[in-house]
Image (tube, rainbow, N blue to C red; front, side, top):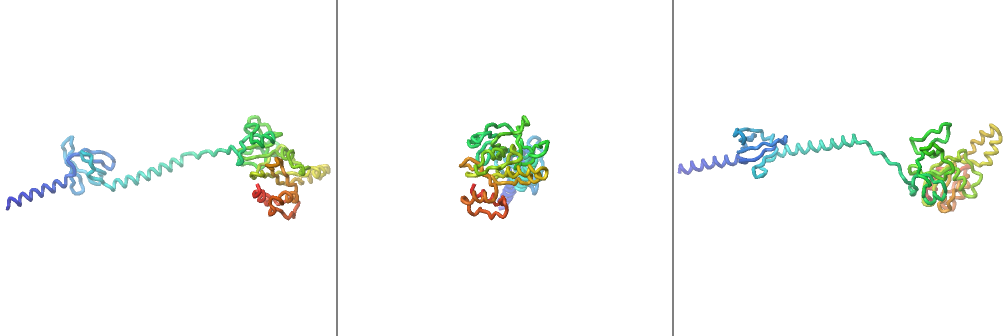
Length: 310
């Protein structure tokens, strides 16, 4: 009986020792990703005990510094989830910081200027009405806008102008006798082209800057709408003949007037005054008719109406 108890005691000790040995041989991976080969790896409290194969020396290492343990058959026998989660979090933060730094350092891409108008006109110079109708520019030479007034015409660089002169960029030569220019995806009509291609009822209109250009504000399938400062040439001529005083009066006779390019009829229609505008809009959009309290129509309401019928 005593011999049986002694045998049972010895077997129990051996079993417990066998349970403490995690692996006979293998590799430990530390939190720093350093790898350590071992023999006879044991768990002793919060320490790993092992034998270094090269020297046979017994060593210990804190369990919380070990990320994982793999035996010689590459079976994972221990994993420290705390270290793995901590690494994943730190890597995630690092990745996000790297992304943020990259975005901050990367210059914003330069916004390309539109090459076409919304209605499909390519950038370029349209010398004739036929070129314009066919959407085929006569020239694609680079142009730059300049101010209408001033002895030294300044280039306009900080905005898209409503009216301007256009110059050939490489020659610094003002464009004349041109029907239209498409610049940075915006359409411009030359004032003289408007006056030369107007409806036959829109006679006697003139402008101080016939070689200037006015920008199209609205483009649709039926009409392209713009505005230009125009005056009745007979009234202005009469005022100018009055000398200095008459000249001062003549300079005030110009009014900003609404103009549409009629796509179907291939001509410009100038709204000379409020009644003339009402004659145009009455058939197309009766709600757009104005009361004509003044000689000229309210252009804000004209724009609203054109935007509906365009």
